[in-house]
Image (cartoon, rainbow, N blue to C red):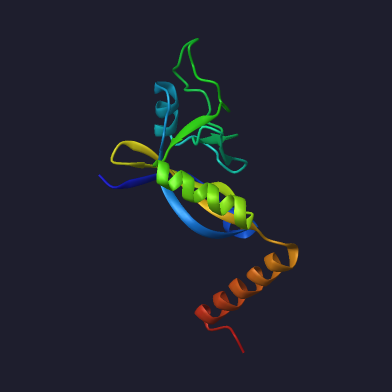
Length: 149
């Protein structure tokens, strides 16, 4: 079947230096999956937290109500559990504690009818880093078009 992207965090590469990427599953209820199949969902403001039990949680991700749902529809911005292996969680915790990384979601997508989330360890960029990145992209764009003098 392949991969069908639901939503991406467009600003992640602009606001953060992205280091290690991980693919993980999500624990969802039925109306959330149906809403995601309609292509709805936002992870722009979302982040990932690891609690004291060693479980990863996706916070502040918005999955809108399913249009044809009833009174038992899901809560839009509830926290959702991420399915990662224990070794991966420990490695992530260690890096977050020592190097000051943040864990952010990059994309939500369907992979063979399962909802997956791509997360990354990220370090925040300063304003001058953002300007530098924008300048490099501008030069690359001009080189590709052949407009550079």
